[in-house]
Image: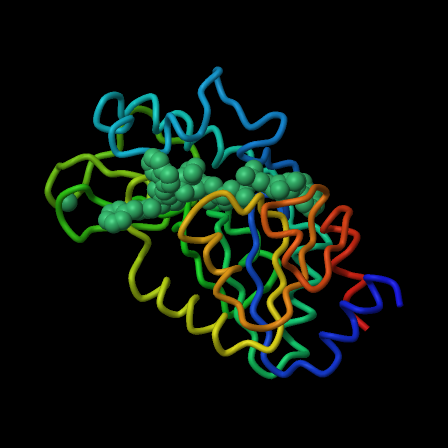
Length: 236
Ligand code: BV8
Ligand code: ZN
């Protein structure tokens, strides 16, 4: 039995499926991954910019990085990998898509039950009051201000050193615990607590990646290749 046949067999009987995606699933849409080639911007690594300290030190620079990324994402389209997960969701009784990605491409592809554990790049939220908004345009020059209290707005994402949104995280853990199969696609599984979801799984894990990850030796099936090509093959 080939790994693909094994993966399809695991999914064929599953009524409850959880999926964890990372930046690799958006790579074929032209969005650079964090740790692969092209992940740098003006020679800064994401870990140097996606932090409260970087924002406190230079909010303008951090906003310029997010605006650059919003621009890339606005030009990007969901790829066959995103769309295959929509097909899988439609055919599965209980389906939860847990994503580390903030790009919103799963929403645009048509996925419904999404848990954005690292937030959403299209959200801007106030650093002082409860104000938040979904931005449509990427053209915001300078540092956006809160219309309610005049404080600076920040991107609605989770930075390194920040807690993940409590309710979203609880849902994600519950989805993994309740699932019969966990698919892990396009993540280097280096960022915690997200990667910890994989070790929490007490069910077979199907890993889809172009490379090995720290969890490859412990998964039920490791499919090597592009998620945009492999995920559609999982549908039957
Ligand atoms: C927390 C949103 C604690 C922002 C992101 C030391 C110092 C400081 C902190 C830590 C530390 N050690 C550990 C930590 C904790 C830290 C962490 O894990 N750091 C890592 C770097 C070691 N985690 C945190 O800080 C988290 N918070 O721990 O809080 C706490 C506790 C109590 C009280 C208060 C606080 C918060 C983590 C969230 C950070 N935010 N994103 C933004 O996007 O700007 S993380 C960022 O990395 C993205 O969300 C991204 O998705 C995520 C993970 O990366 P991947 O998705 O895996 O992407 P990557 O490029 O790494 O890999 C791509 C993969 O795809 C590769 O495997 C590649 O082979 C594959 N691929 C590529 N192309 C394809 C493909 N596969 C298939 N097909 C393809 N075509
Ligand atoms: Zn405010």
